[in-house]
Length: 167
Image (cartoon, rainbow, N blue to C red; front, side):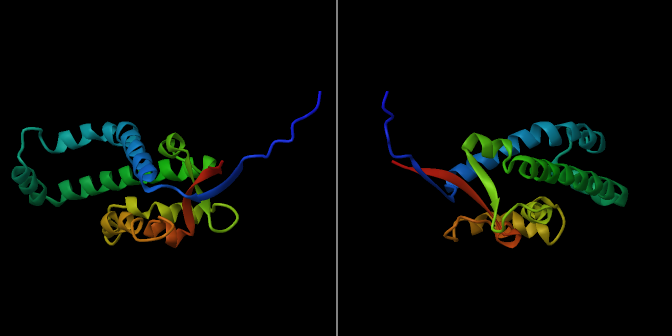
């Protein structure tokens, strides 16, 4: 039987679409909320009663440095766990669960992803100054760069890409 000599599909990688990146991030945040943040809610309820208003909770936290340092410590531990989620998933598979669902992945501008690059990408999750400034600045960079890169991706020399097929 003769073999058909059909042309192969031509594929290339390019910057991931912004809507896919945003969707992947929201999926990852849902997972992080369920797996990491939800178990810590009980700790916060033990410190600040549920029926306290915002101003009452603020006064309570201001009344003792013990409360504030405890919450800071717990928040820092939570952020380390969030960083570990992104670091471990991207280290092993170049993707998080959200990125897998959106069929996008992380690549290095160099040959392979290094640990420092993945950590640089995750600086945005640290709840301490000056990293909290990245909460607003980092995602805005996606809208102003041709490659849709966040600031921490530029600093970490990484990109989020997807595979495109020419037909």
